[in-house]
Length: 254
Length: 256
Image (cartoon, rainbow over all chains, first blue to last red):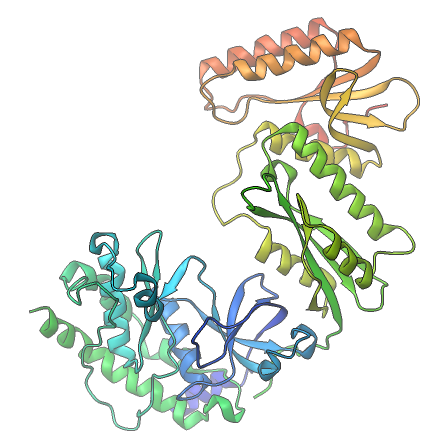
């Protein structure tokens, strides 16, 4: 990929939504200490100030998840002191950070086990197509510490928390299957061709130009770990793995 | 890398007005957003359409009156302040609640109110809302208030409840019946009974009556069209002016 193409995209600068008001504090047990803010587009975002491999990982993962329709969109969020709660609990979130669109009515897979307390979800209530799609996507982006959300009404699964992606992107490596466990649900739910094909097609339709756009126009503060060379490596790494993904998934299905 | 259109921001406060129809169940619904600036120069309330909050006309009337009361406090001097909002939060624990005022970034007050409205009050995205009687009544009330009229929703005169009652003008009190044949339903007899109640009420009171009727749509079934013709015939024979909702947009709904 041509560095000059990314440079040309970056020239326009980044656009951010502005936090308008604090909505709620972090979910119990969250190490990242995200807080939800209502932003000026009328949507609520979970704002994070740190991620394992930089805020760029969370942003790019979220942009691509939304494109592949497997997870909520991530956006750059500008949090002004005026939007912070008076108790100081979210003071660490002042600045230009990353936000992941809120998905009401969902539960993190890590919390499901605690809720069930040894019980199990009815496997037939899980939407196998969305589960299969998330497996394909998380395999593509190489999600470390992968997480997902389960909509307890519809059974639909979405991918979240992509801060653990793109840790080692200097050398492209073929994808290996990532199945994020859901308590009480077999890892084979979603392991059918008709559950993975739609998302495979979506990912293969993402062009190299699209990948450059996904990594472009990102703040350059240290927490983002987003210098241009690294972002270009991320795009090239994803491009390589996109070409290997169908084979890796096919092997898992067989 | 620079952010496009970087802004400067001042602080304000917002509270959500919540309505608990049945306090024993403690199921609150978000009714309105109140936004104030820190300096006390600006204050605005934006509410959800009342018909979405309750299907009952009498309850709609109560809610509407409460919202009008709050709105008046934001328009009058001295204006509703942060400390007064905090005090209302402390006082109201039953059917009506006001959440503790929280900071809001007021880069642009309209943008902030729009964002809070969309986050806390707007219905989930979907198709266009069907024009039920309640939705039509929302429009009628809004149009009359835009004309500067003082309107009560779901108000009694004597023993009779009316959809809208206009007060404060000279002459007989103006009353409005709002009927919709524009929403899908199987049984039109409740609409006919509604019209019959209105006709009986005005024959017993010295009032100035008027009706706003949404006609059946082009795909409506024959029963809807027959019922509409029946009701319009009753109103015509009683010499009651009938307006169409389109008249609201051209401000032809003039009541004295």
